[in-house]
Image (cartoon, rainbow over all chains, first blue to last red; front, side, top):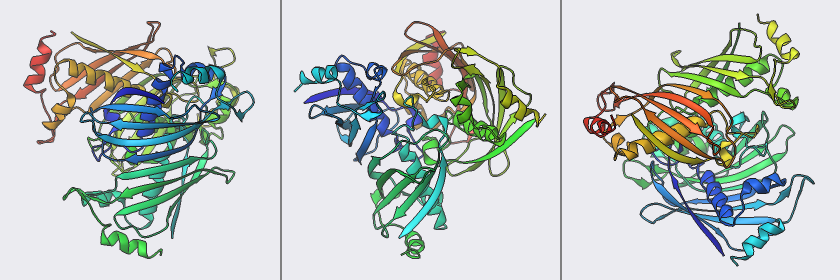
Length: 134
Length: 134
Length: 134
Length: 134
């Protein structure tokens, strides 16, 4: 299992007039989390894209447990439970400074080849780096 | 059943460097759709909030079927299948100009009383307006 | 002089915990305004880009006169005072439902040729459509 | 003079289909920069707001010198040139990893008392912390 943690500071733009983080901001937090998870593999998603491999989202399920507030320093925990084939499911858990789980989500990405315009398997170098964690 | 349709023009800000609408923009589209749905009831969500009744999101499930592109005029179809109690599930379907279903989602909101700081039932005037559609 | 008006409904995402539209949302409003202004010329910015002509921003000056609020139906007035050469200055005035000027701005865009990677003059068909207003 | 530096990683959401950071994202970067600057004073803007003192923007001038790209690690340099009275002008310079100045801006905020609903002077404890830098 691959687990990666990163910190995100809630900024003013993230809040809405209910005084909490807007429900549509969380997908951005998941994206930041998985980008840092990939970076920890020694890869950057930026490089993956340069080889015309993209990772569009196919589905996203979010559970909002508690609110996040302005200036909170959130811990974003990104979890990969198995080595991806074409589909790449990634779980995210977000914790506040009190250590409470405030949000949990699962996104399913899919590897997509921009040259063939078709779904494809994860690149070998990607799998090789992941295997070190499984 | 209550069904409401509204149009949304994709703006440049909504796109990302993959050349499509960013996966995290869709929750905003759902929000616009349900706001217009409530307006069609003869109510505005703004007025609801003035009475200290809020509608935070509890969960959100999204399926991304096809991409949306810059300047697309999307049709956002908002669907309420039953009269809400405390929980308020709302479905959204988004269609492109070719009439293709590109995105479908279900958000579950919950009525919340800002005076008591507790979940609450939907206000009577809200239920009364909804009943006309069921 | 070319003047175009479009309406924008403030959505929940646009607000922050101060209970007003976040100061960084306005550039999006200007973009929507100028996109509709170009559409009134019988052109779409989407088509312009397909010909590898882009319009990046070079500068932006904003004056915030009054706040905008959730669910406001704003009038965005987009003004072009002279036919563009390479630089394309565009003014925007935003009015609330009481007719008050709440925000004024000037963005300077520049025509840029993606094939030559250099600034360029506005395309002839663009100028021709604009000339009808001057 | 008070100078503060913070790093911001460009995320996918920040990009648009031109392949660069959207022109309307920069105000968010300035906000993150000045929030960290205030934190370095030993104050948080969150605490300032709890005392019903707000800092809405009155004007914003931006110059876009070069593009920022996905995954860039930007350096945001926030500069206060004099101790604020009612108005609080703040300059921001943004540098890319090559050390190039890609964006410069000046925002003018104004201290505002939410109890009296009027502009007000900067709180004494705020001025006292700033004086250490002048």
